[in-house]
Length: 347
Picture 1 (cartoon, rainbow, N blue to C red):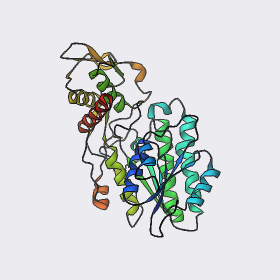
Picture 2: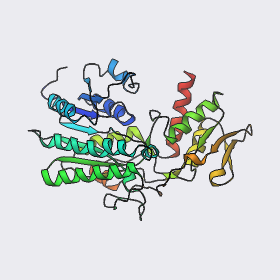
Picture 3: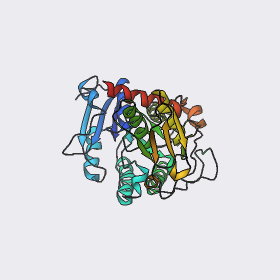
Picture 4: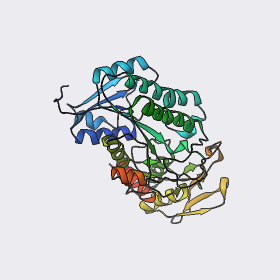
């Protein structure tokens, strides 16, 4: 692949994920030469970017095999590609799973970020680095909403690893002058979200129930609240953060919290199904009012050992400095996901 002298080059770690695929689309549309790091596996997991490899990005999208724990190959890829922008979106991203595999979570989300910072520090030219931090580093904050100065207080292994990585980005920014940005993103969803995440479990489950392919969805804490936004909007903020004159940390959030219960109700309503909830806590259920059948059931095994308190982001700095504001919020996200999943089933 050749590029013109003025063409920007970006490297995306985590390009096959939800955010990585949307970011690749955005950068290709802006004329970038895009390189992505993928794992070598016996089965391809590239469904989110397959349309780019055979479509508009065919001549400007290049994939490289590596792994977050293989720091030598990552260094070689960076040296070969010589990117001017690096987006680090890869790692173990499931909060609940981080309790089951805390060491892998730490290696991929904390140690790998430090290794990347070391690689970029040694480059003979300036590079801009975006690190996908997370609201989970706040864990159980004492104040709401949270902003860029809120103290970290993670309550799960994922949040602890992200807190370490975010702080190392600040250290390398201050000590070595690296253009390192932490995007402290709150939950952002889409039809490309993995099925093991509660939002996609709800939207896809609602679509399958509406289509007669599934009878119920089993969830955990319906009272848990999250600041849910729309992933395609969040990747635009990632790009904007690296176009700024100075590196900073940014809260990326909608500023509104939605409960799991309300998210589910919105997804079902979009497909013409009204839910009626009964019971409390771990015994709660919801049934379709048109048929009376129970379609949503709570199982205590899906409760987290420690649940984050209400995480709500204050994104005023991103709005002021980047001109970015989330437009799709909570129930609207649920409706779009349910609609897209049902359309895909019909197709």
